[in-house]
Length: 116
Image 1 (spheres, rainbow, N blue to C red):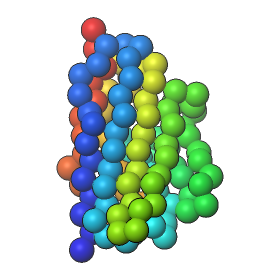
Image 2 (cartoon, one colour; image 1 turned 90 degrees about the vertical axis):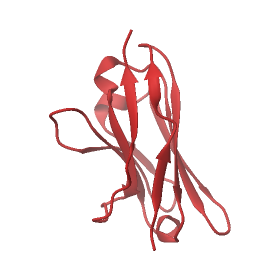
Image 3 (cartoon, one colour; image 1 turned 135 degrees about the vertical axis):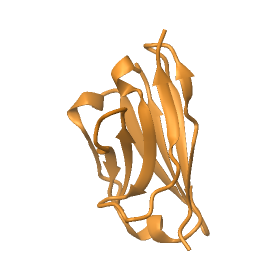
C-alpha cells in the first residue's frame, strides 16, 4: 500500500530556505517519474518540479534557479527532496509529492508559509 509522507514545511521569511522531504513506503517512486506539487489558497494544484526515473529534472518557470528536486533510491524506500532557496511570499502553499503524472492518492502535504 502506497503511503506518502511529506515533511519539512514551516514559516520562513522572504529570501529564506527550506528543504522538503517525502518518503514512499512502497515501491512506486523507484520506477516512476516523481514530482513536487503545490496548492496555494484559492488556486489549483500545480506541478512545480519533476524528476524522471533517469534523473532528468524540470521546473515550472516561477521556481527555476531557486528550487532543486532530488531523489535517493535506497534499497527498500525511495525518498524525494525539494531544496527551496530565495523563497518568496508567492511560494506560500501546501506542498505535496507524488508520481508524475500523479496517482489518485495524495498525502496530507506540508505547509510552507513565506512571510515577514
